[in-house]
Length: 181
Image 1: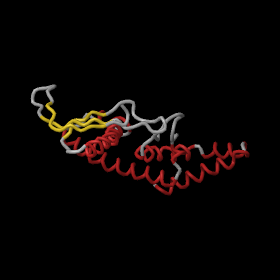
Image 2: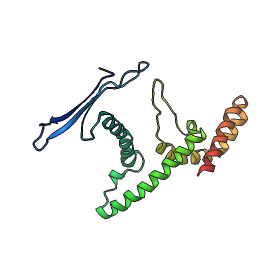
Image 3: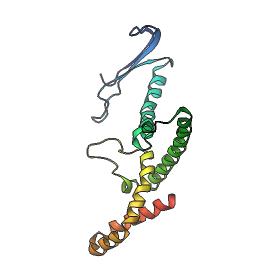
Image 4: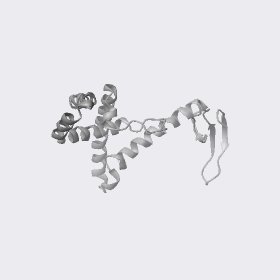
């Protein structure tokens, strides 16, 4: 049930040959204001306490998001088909590029202009839609796209005078974005 947890030491795990004694943790976060996980977590661990096991497992979602970004979400590492030596070099380059894009995304979020790069939340969505990596990577595309449409933006601003404050906010966000690059 939501709000329950337990930690059992030295549990015999026998699904496959070769497994031995592990600690077994169960955790289901309590619901808060009708929000919470649909299922609990069952973890095999050797960390020693429930608190450590749960805290470590929570990092998993960030790590999996990073793997997705490197594989299919931006850098398409899986499609590289590189040899072992070239793959090592490629992973090093991706690590540097990933760090730069993530730091860029953090700057964008700190400036408060992330809503111009991508929709933050969908209707009835609790967590933010895009990671700092995504914001940093696609912030470049957003600026390039706007720079390519400058004439059209000026024409729109001339036609839709009642929307001028919104256009000006967008242009200010673009100038802030350009300064961060």
